Length: 369
Image 1 (cartoon, rainbow, N blue to C red):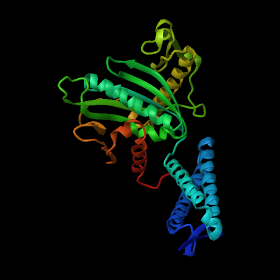
Image 2 (tube, rainbow, N blue to C red):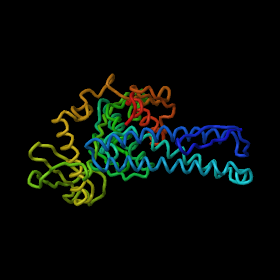
Image 3 (cartoon, rainbow, N blue to C red):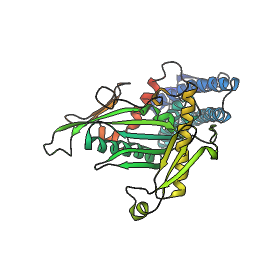
Image 4 (cartoon, rainbow, N blue to C red):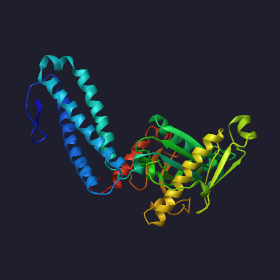
């Protein structure tokens, strides 16, 4: 049976024959985890060394240093398992504990591995998601609403804060919307969702039960934190209030709770239309800062290509991902070729990570930062 032995001087691990009641499968898993720890540790040490030499945000450096400490903590966790499996009596009584620890280590390593692909301060933070109905009439406005729910459910499943900033209702579904998802790595995970999303299904709005193709566009932008410098002077903005519309009961329709803020130098605007005017001012200002930040990046030539221009053609041939509910069921990302035969699990947020992770890793062909 296999046993792992750590070489303390080199910080590496090798395998030798050993008899243990834990089971070869668990020991082989531990071997794989050790190997991944070593690889991840090397990558993070390289990133931290590079950041220390450059002029980078201290918060970003501190985050990467924290990730490195987390990997070192996982190594210690593996060391404990190694010590347990050396004692036959303890190991046999601790098999369930060992299996649980191995699963915990796997989840931690997956999360840390993903973070090495995120190479800027903004990618570690919150995201704003803008959704706009494309070609397809009632089906497309309903499809836009379905996408909004997908991202909201994904955020809730992750334990993130989800804020609905503005929604323009349609007869069926929504014409456009803006939501904010707040949490670690959210923008880095979602930024590649920008593009046209295509749905094929039997239309619930067609009395003849015909198949319908619908389109909606998604644009993801960073929700700017205070640590990222965006200079907006009070004299440069104009704040207007208006009567909110849509769901929310009598209060939302009879008070001037909706807020629209205009950045006078650029003409950029942002709105929020929840039931609380104070909350709307904060949310609208967050959106405005994000849009001004992207505008400044574009002027410097460093803005993301997805946000330099709006998506002009929301129709067949321009989509990044297809969701097919009829005549078969599948989701296919046209950039990564990632597929899933369970579109309902993607649309309820449960399996969306499959596409988010493949998008991140496929976009980094060279060594990740």
